[in-house]
Length: 86
Image (cartoon, rainbow, N blue to C red):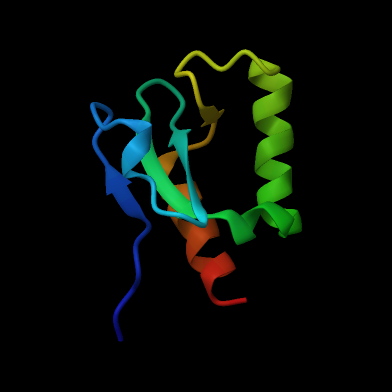
C-alpha cells in the first residue's frame, strides 16, 4: 500500500508554480517547508483548526509572505493524508 505525500516545492520557487485549484502553505515551527495542497482542504474542519492556530500565532502578517502553519511537519503530513481520504 502506497502512502501519498503532499507535493513539496523548494522555498526558492515562485508563486507561478502552484497549479490551479491548489495553494501553497509554509509548515514548521522553526524551519519551514513549502507544501502545495488542494484548495478543497479549506472547507475541512481539521484544516480550519490549523488555520486558526496560524492566525493566533501570526495574525494576518505571515513572515514568509504566505500562510505559515506553526506545527511539526510530520503532524501536517498526517493531517493532509487523512484529509485526502475523506
